[in-house]
Length: 158
Image (tube, rainbow, N blue to C red; front, top):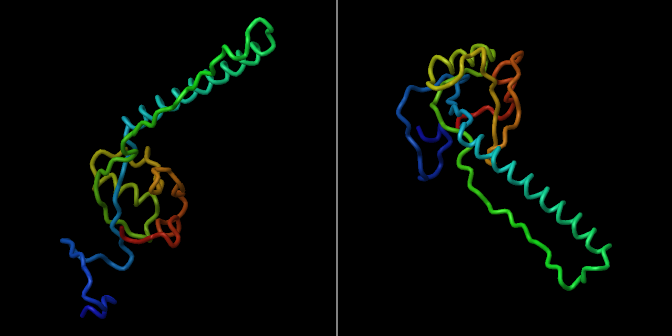
């Protein structure tokens, strides 16, 4: 009944096609880092550094001009360098779903991902990490722990 699933109101229920999971199994979404994003991010970082260096150079020139009596201060106009926001796109590309067991070692997890999901690196060249809503990579999953031990209380279906 719906009470067994703790559904007490007539709210929305999402029904997904697929087989029921065992209590230790979880459905994971697998993402890989987008190469285009990495290139755009490197270019944006280089541009920021160029802007910073230009601003520092301008400060040095202004300091030199202030010491020089031949230039009047009212004739100088400070240069304003504005950085424009650039959308870099999505940092991670979704490549597939995979059912993983919380009791598995990380070697088993990597092998299952390699077997079930296309476009991922080989298991021996794979490092698993979590990322947050800001596309920032956070914790690294340690190979000497199980999936559940790595994720602690954060292990749940998406």
